[in-house]
Amino acid sequence: MRRIDEAVRSTYTPHVLAGIGSFGGLYALPDDVPEPVLVASTDGVGTKTMLATALGRLDAIGRDIVNHCVNDILVQGARPLFFLDYVASSRLEPAQVAAVVDGVASACREAGMALLGGETAEMPGVYAGGELDLVGTIVGVVSRRRIVTGQRVRSGDVLLGLASGGLQTNGFSLARQVLGAHLHEPLHPGGRLGETIGDALMAPHRSFQRALTPLLATDLVNAAAHVTGGGIPGNLPRVLPPGLGAEVDPASWTQPPIFDLLQRVGEIDEQEMRQVFNLGIGMLLVVAPERVDDAHRLCPEALWTVGRVVEGSGVRFTT
Image 1: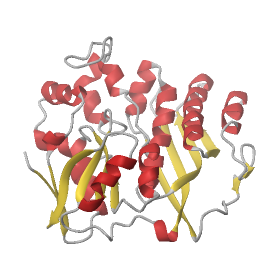
Image 2 (image 1 turned 180 degrees about the horizontal axis):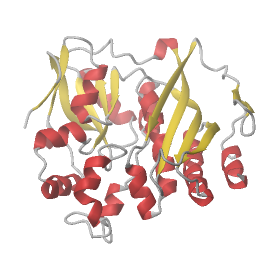
Image 3 (image 1 turned 90 degrees about the horizontal axis):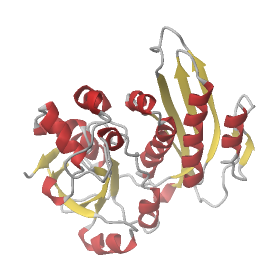
Image 4 (image 1 turned 180 degrees about the vertical axis):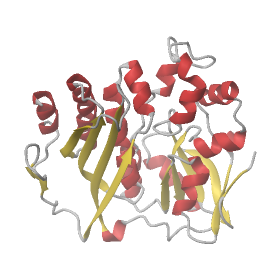
């Protein structure tokens, strides 16, 4: 509890009125947002926890859950305010819980938000021995007039993609089934020197806060989709108005080698790969054609032009 207390308090902002030790956290809304609207989301890291436990990288999944939740509210234009976490196991190991919370706190500091509270739970019989579950809840704020709703999307708008780097936090049930026995083997071909399959599977769930913030500030983004479970076909249509779909060119971006390995070893067909994994695209932005150059100029990292919005529904891959 002392370790957790130090990590949590290191994230506090001036808006935190009461945090750890209270029955409920108290947070004063910032006064720099006109017509403030709260945006909230809850998610988990799924069975990536099993890999993290096996590899001794529990701080990594602490960062993953924060970044995942940050991205989920970014797509509506919100900036993060505070976060709450939930860690459960059949038997809580203090060092494991502290490692998770250290990772959560580190990512919260990077996002400029407070880790306002959380919960730990021991539930023998519910969770398998030696395993744990990790869930997070985020609350952010956006001005009503700056909410990204997707209503401005039109046929002909351009799809810009940001690199995921890896699986992020989705598709791990299938990934463990295919590669779970090979975690310590080298990743070939294309891996960095010394990189193992376990390293590639544990690649961080990236936060796109730094990349999106300057674009959102200029009302440049007509819609944005965080590519999580369901891949591009399962997430992009969620932000498109009725009557519109998308064409996506898979050859327009670089796919990390871990996906090629998964497909080859698991003998997974292309359709299933696209429906389970992000395949290297962590965030999709929908931008009017005349604003594409502005997007490249403002974004602090590379953007891939991966497709366009078309009349119809769903996602069609061109190759």
